Image (cartoon, rainbow, N blue to C red; front, side, top):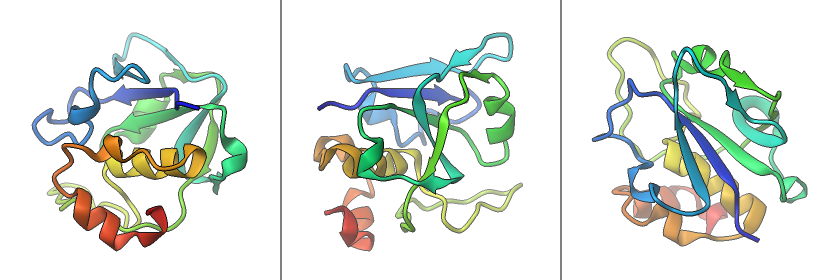
Length: 149
């Protein structure tokens, strides 16, 4: 089974630094640009969120919903989401992405968007190594998280 992935992307985030850029154009991934005047429907989808229940294989078959933004802006983007997506969290994983914020402290368990997406797809549908093609820190991420191999 192929994943059905919807990504709400904050246009304030730099495309040059975006870890999701290499997966643009894939048939199973839809990007929606955040717009304060529009709504995004995430009905029946799993929202990767640090406050949800643990994601498991039992959740397979539902679409994934990922919000690509800074932690600081996440609540604002979620205000424009309809459908009350089902919140699920990933198991403890380590990021390889060199995060650096000058205005806000990133939470310790935070991952780059592509890392979170890869981990969720791996749990739900099995390995999809092609999701990490083009991700500069691919090898480091997989070495830090052997449970994903």
